[in-house]
Image 1 (tube, rainbow, N blue to C red):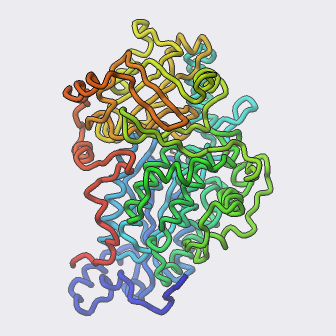
Image 2 (tube, protein in one colour; image 1 turned 45 degrees about the vertical axis):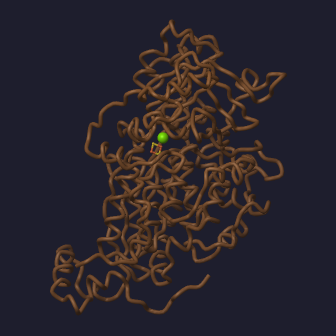
Length: 591
Ligand code: FES
Ligand code: MG
């Protein structure tokens, strides 16, 4: 790795130390003084470091960062920098309606403007809850100033009646128990509370832990950062070191463009499979890669990810939660296995200033109940299967979460292993699903596949986590707790359903799902990766003349702007017009 360690003129000096624009410099400086910064320090040529604050009262998963930022500041000061903390657009996965996904691109846009338009030489990205991680990495990649990720860390492990209860996973299980009449509302709320025992983000390997693990796998955080539980003392310590390190990175001019290479993204995709990562990693990794100017293709998920074995025994794919994962060595312990097996491209730069290979040295796990050896994994083929057919050009399925019961029922026909056919029950959005799922007229049985459309980026808008639909209560009471599902939306990263999801193009833009009718048969072949409606070709072609099912009107200006500019999930649901803006920091903004 080559580094430039000679003193360099920093971009902040164009604001604060610019003899050609002394009139403007006075204006730029004066208001920072009103809370005690002196003109001397702002003009001293010390790196000015932004702390992108993602925590707030309405971003409770990231609220720990309000505390951690103090340690980040101290690290920045100690290393000779000046900290300027600023707020980000909040994103709270579980509470933002119609879906938090719509805010990923909004937070991205906001951060791009801040990083470009203010006198910042580097930035600490404070990540946690699902989209807070990709949104900030997308912006840092596009702007390309030195940037480092500080994860907030997961909550402590949850316990209820002597059993581990993980965030999200406990909710999905509780819902099924409620529908089956095994628990009452009060008990359901008790379980939910027990699954969230402290500050921090979700303690399962849901989308939050997945995206923070991916940030680390990409090489964007200090080694071991992502898995440290929020309340642990190591969390505050790594906040301090992250602050120190970003100042050095500014002196080295070590930028995201040096770290976020195709090799880094392929490694992240491999790590995602090995940790049993969230299906949301697919659009988020695509979006980050595109804003970094890296080509990541739909078939990379099959070529590089699918055959990677599951090594991490953590919910929802496995047994344990975040504290055990951290004590077992966290992401570096999983990557150590993959590195030994030759699956990584580890001779690549990272924000530590060392290569990923160097970061992983000596990181073998000490807990084989949690991190399994590569030679004896928990499961083979833990990556996402990519499917295509006449219903969509692209969808993914997490085949590693297929339960033995599901496999026995659908995938073990003696004449055609891994092939099944079902009768489609089609819902237009989640209101329609909730209104009709228990309607006896639909005669839903174990021969059915539940299909939801109108749940994609344009349709919802934002793409909703609704594809893991629960069967009708009558079926659950008979012991059928899951049916095959398919949709143009997403599903929660904490879900253990083997849904076919992220179908692109979505129904709202005329994708094949818009032609499907309840009662059509669908054939799914996991050997060939095909998923097709078995409808006569002439009839299928004729249905293309019908308009796609109606979608609800936009309720806010952002929803409308989002719908007009967003792409499909296969390519990351990016604001398409934003993708060409790369290395934005190379051009200083006008005075
Ligand atoms: Fe925020 Fe899971 S809901 S991390
Ligand atoms: Mg979610």
